[in-house]
Image 1 (tube, rainbow, N blue to C red):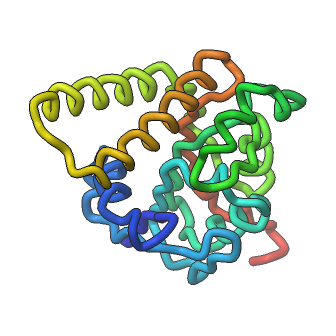
Image 2: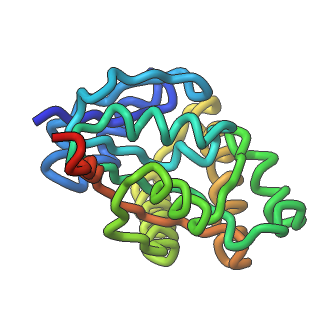
Image 3: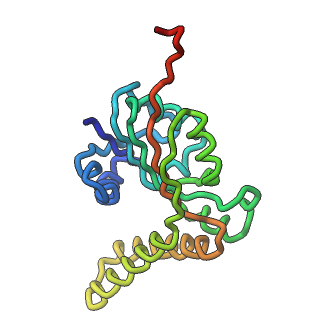
Length: 202
C-alpha cells in the first residue's frame, strides 16, 4: 500500500513524522514537504494521506482537497487533524486575532462543518468527525510541564532560551483560543468512494 504524510516544509519533517506516528500506517508513510498553497499530487497514486495541523493555513482549500481526493485510489483513506473555527463570524474576535498574529503560518480557518460539506461534495465518505481539542490541549500542557521539569536545573543557551520563550508565547495564545471556545481541533477521517456505474456504462 502507498501512504503519504504532508508536512509544511523540510524543517517540519521530524516533528511531522512523530505526530503521524500515532498509527502503524503513519510510521511507514514517507513525509513529504510541500509548497503549501499550490502542492500537486500524482492522481490515483495513494492509499492513504495523513496531515497534521496544516490545512488551516491553506488559502484555497477547495483546490487542496480536490488534489487530495484525486490522488487517492478507490477506498483510499484521508486522515487529518486541523485547527478549525467553532462557528463562522468569529474571525475578528480579539482572542483569535492574538493567536493568529503569532502563528508561524497565517490561518485561513474553516469550520468542521465546512470541511464535512466539501469532502462529501468530492465523494469522500466521512467516517469520523471528532472534536479532540481537550485531548490536544492536555497533551500540550503535559508536554510543556515535562520539558520544564527536565530543564529546570539546566543552564540553557541564550538562543535556545529565546526560542523557548517565543514557543511558550505561541502555545499560551493557542490554549487561550481553545479555552475561549472559538478555536477547536478536529480529527476527520474519510475514505474515497467507488465511482457508481450506470447500467448504460456497461
